[in-house]
Image (cartoon, rainbow over all chains, first blue to last red; front, side, top):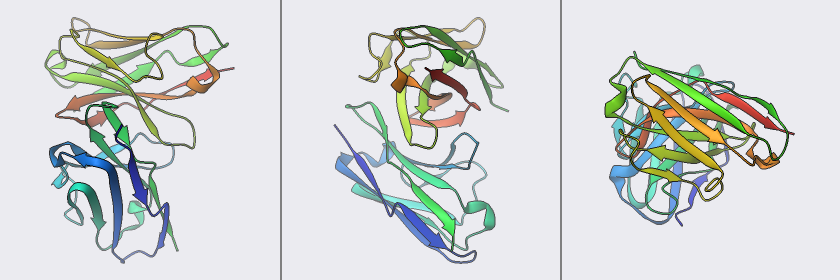
Length: 109
Length: 116
């Protein structure tokens, strides 16, 4: 079973700063099948990144993903007020077929 | 614009049944795999089930296998999640998604299922 561990659990930052969120897999994940989502309170998750580094349509280039194997990151540059949310990584594999990390909360410092 | 609208959520007693629906529009529904993901309020995301474009192959999380049935009607652009033998731990918001190459590119607004 592939377990995704995100760190840190909570990140306190200020607008204008840059942050890097981590997603570590318990086994190697094909980078084609690693995605990132953003979720704001009361809303459904929204796809940000797929295939580890491909931005979803319309996503600002302030968001970038990278990584391979067991280590993946999401970097958000020049934080805007609307970026403060929960972020989840997700993998597609065999067991379980799809799994999510537990999330990283980005909050105002 | 892709739209996914869930319905059918509500309050049900343990051991009871409920059927969720997800109406899709804005894309060629019959050519996409689809999925359900749930979220306990205030908690993380858990994949529940996925099916292929024809509905011919369906996968389930171990936590719901044997109790939930995922089906689709491509003539009505609608997904169904039949949930039987519901447990308190099935309480969650259930989202339907369009599934592409292992990721969920569009999500519905969710339907709350409360088992109590």
